[in-house]
Image 1 (cartoon, rainbow, N blue to C red):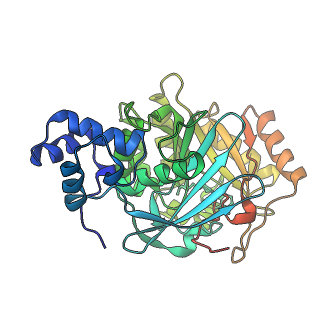
Image 2 (cartoon, protein in one colour):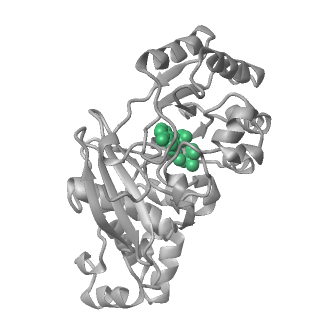
Length: 353
Ligand code: SAH
């Protein structure tokens, strides 16, 4: 296992300092940053604009890659699931989702996940470990390189969602630093407005997130309108009840600036949380907390072998959406992508099939 510093996870000032210590001028730091993030090079050897001696020095003292792509699965709908490994052997999953106008890359913030949501396959792994800033950024680099080739432009821009394995708000600092690095105009240049972070509801971190000056969009996974049901489906609810969560959501909503998006995710589980009564209770919860303008993404459950849940019939999904809309709540049904290769929401569990 390499214990060399992974420069892909270094902020601009950190990279400046690292190269200064090697006795290099500031513009070398710019070149290395562009090499790593704009040209998406995963080795210093390829940075041929640097003097050979510096390339050799970098190879000895640092690394530009800590992830290896172990397998790639391609769905009939074009979605690709990448099963990567950290250099200490932990699984990392990343999903590439092409759409007509823009690509989306869904990256992981942790290897495994500690959240124990009853309907999610990743939960079965438990938490393996937090990913480093560099591991978060390199997932995106590795996927773009696979799709477009090293150094090639991305033809129609990229959206990012922190909706892979893990709970981003339990790896807050590394995540926020990764967002900052990825948004740099001399690098990947994926601005925070193109990034969405999803949380299962780590309430204190929602307040911290609300205080950030420059931040991605936020999604909160709700999936139940009552404490009784949410305690069962998402045990994190026992730590922070719905009222606490919705108060934090309201506080966050008040800080929204123009163009920023805020959504709730609601996984629809057939016969469990998908009745008209549940839709009414959900609308009532939003009204109670004065959050009726926040949009709801309805995600029909993606089934997986050991999970005791199944998606509702399409009729029921539509009825649920209509019930919400009748009560003035905007709801969108999300089309599942990559279900056949275990790439859809809640299906990431380092499966080889
Ligand atoms: N831990 C964060 C990030 C994961 S995002 C969070 O919970 O928000 C993954 C999204 O997929 C969450 O909204 C989650 O509720 C949803 N999800 C989990 N398992 C699912 C499944 N089997 N089918 C559909 N959606 C699922």
